[in-house]
Image (tube, rainbow, N blue to C red; front, side, top):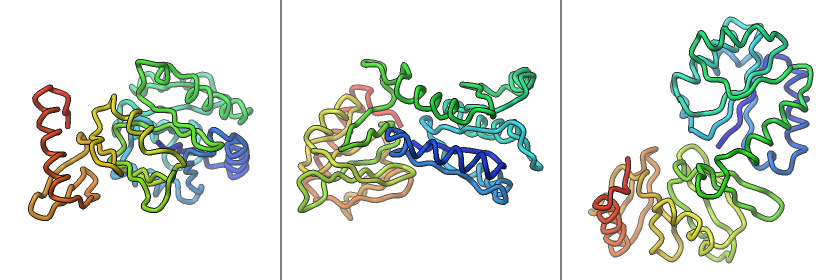
Length: 252
């Protein structure tokens, strides 16, 4: 999960960053704010940038650039139909234009009150129905003083760091991070999402595996990351994937 703030006013950028980092909950989530001079490059990069369902884009509708905030949002929505788009605007008439462009907006906030947008973002993340028990798309993991919101579909695998009792590496499709926790507890959390948990130091998401290379004892994930395992571990994983496939639980 990542948060993107698309705004061409440096003052508003810094104010948003300051308020964002003041929130202990939000500070744990990656925030990207392209420089005003880099916005057109960012617009072009959207054509190739991986956008996850859990990513959130906060977009100023009235960008003073070649491409408007609506242009940005239209391209974002074309690349991913499920990610979140929050609009900042002082013009209440823009809503109809957004509807006519087939851009599904999740929220509108006034540009005059940055704190309202930050509070709205926090409410969206931590009070959203997706986090309700039994219908979760995002997993909430508390680690020390931070809260992480993780989309299981984005996780390739978890790995316990050798020599550490409580440091876990998360290898995701578009990011990598460390958290403080116990691998046994995390395995239980991800078990409901059909992760492979039979290895002592790993929890692996079979749905993100592109190739199992038995000759080299290597797993290749959809983003081309790799993981080397023992021959015995590879066999256990393949058997588990076959079981999921037979039960119609393995979806690529």
